[in-house]
Image 1 (tube, rainbow over the protein chains, first blue to last red):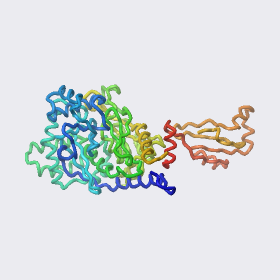
Image 2 (image 1 turned 135 degrees about the vertical axis):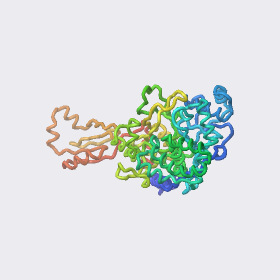
Image 3 (image 1 turned 30 degrees about the horizontal axis):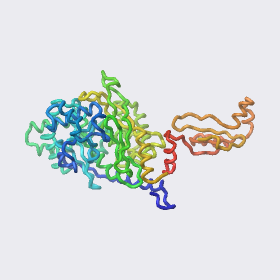
Image 4 (image 1 turned 90 degrees about the vertical axis):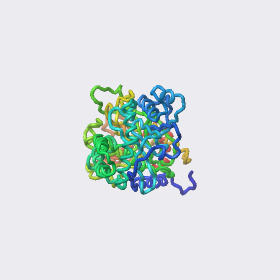
Length: 425
Length: 94
């Protein structure tokens, strides 16, 4: 509410956004442990499935999301078969909620259920924690809607063996500071959304020796090391939890117009803004444009899905495309010059650069950080997101990679809600 | 933008520029009417031309460098089709 004649709304917004930016830059994210979702997530109700993106009911879920939900219900033992699980989901016996409502995130379908192991990232500068499941690998996995026995068995191994082993290794290492790993990863060609090859290698260096100290059985240790080193995207879930932990303190700053959540559920795209509370501003998810693997067409693709664009909210992913020449071709975005232009254009819609995460191809400029809804709406530049493209048929995996944009309509709705809340007429 | 509200003086040319579409707006001046009638630009260029440049500053800078009198008007077309959005953005300092 505008209190007096001396009050300047533009000044108040500028100060609030500067504070949001300061908090993002001041973050100190540390990977501290792995725990079980039911123990970690406050108020996590029984028979609840957390999913990627904004809230959605069963009837509106896309194919991969429905497939993943059915698999997650079987994994938890709430149903014996996928058919029974689907009937249960449709009947209203299962509660669906976004990961973000529990300070969690999940890639693609983003399934989080009570028995799943979660990576824990603590932002030591502010004392908040964020969570993400452990990356399952590529191909037939639950994040792409996979739900057969192979998927369920892997999830059980992750819950019983891999999760505890990774947690023990992290504790043995005394926690792993992530800010420096991100900084080094950027200089090694990762943008941390669609390319995590460097950061996966860096985190493996941190975890390998501690893991050999805490895992006594040689066959288990071998499988663990193969599991982590054989998947370039192992780090994705870590950087997602890190991004969530970094952006959380920027939420709830009066007058701030900084975006603190971007997420998609395969049907809708949703954003949340620092000073508009927990309200989601939602529009239909768009189709990513990019390169498809051989044998697939655009008709095989599902609309944009996953919480992974939390990385873009802290200046990584599409915003840091200039740091990652290797990813530009992979997502079909053109040349290195095009990548630099993507990053430069994101500089027009953000509060400022992050001086600790720099890009060699841009004369060591910092990644553009803190999306301002006003700038999106005044420039017409929509946030750029690097993303995997999933097959619209459940469990058929990734069919390509591309670039997608946050829908303009989300930002219009957010601005109108902001105006209502702050009495701007 | 409502061109009816712009008061032209003789010899002024209104040049606009769509920042996003990169499309030059049509010249809308009294002189355009005059020129279409006389089918001659000589009369215009023989006199001292004054330009009102709306939008992209580079056009004004080029004209200024060429010692042409120019008034710069800061403007870009609203990105949103909702007029309330443009009004709110202005009040919010965007």
